[in-house]
Length: 321
Image 1 (cartoon, rainbow, N blue to C red):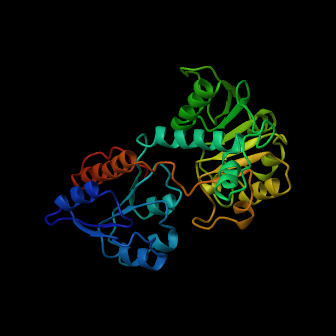
Image 2: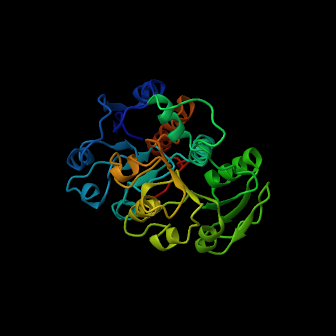
């Protein structure tokens, strides 16, 4: 246990109740502007703080983590994903990494369901028509979308969020569930069929929902996979921008090779390709999968729990490295 209060940098603004909790125990430096920090700023922080409370917007790669006079011992990432952190380098450098799983499962699955409904029922195009004053009244043939009743949803990654999304698709929309997961899943509390390859998902599903991590150099859903989608299929991504080959997806949409997409995450956030912005068959959200007051507060509290455990020399609830 430190004889003085550990110095903690919070890289982005957190709900006030979380920041107040951290102030009670730690010498906290807050990012009051809520602007993402640069690599240079993060590198300096590595030498001046005992811990970072970070987010997906913080590029904590080897160039940041390997500093001459490193002081940081813990990176408490706020979020279930941690692909913003070079975990191998962190481990090699003796830096502990934690995340905040579980608390954002339902909120993210809700956004996946929202995207499914928005893109299949053409909600964005309909709303834009109304807001721009182009709606001429009720029509039986205008703005037709597709019903998902009896259609197939393919889940890629049947973890917590994948399962929560599958339940919503099954019980709320009446869809049939097939899924791909790297390891066999034998116990589910709902009807679903596991397949052996992502290829099988892409070729058969009417909606594909992605719930797996990836990397810029090796996306889980590749261009080859996207080429297998049916012309009537939709792709939903609430995982990470690098979970899919974004360029291949953009090309498939621009060339009308698939019916549409619903996206909450992007490869180079906050940059979104202009080709996507102008399409009517794409619903775009600004990474709001966990954006409820309750969930963001819970995420911050879990990060604080990890801090408390680390500096009390007890087992971290959510240790990654």
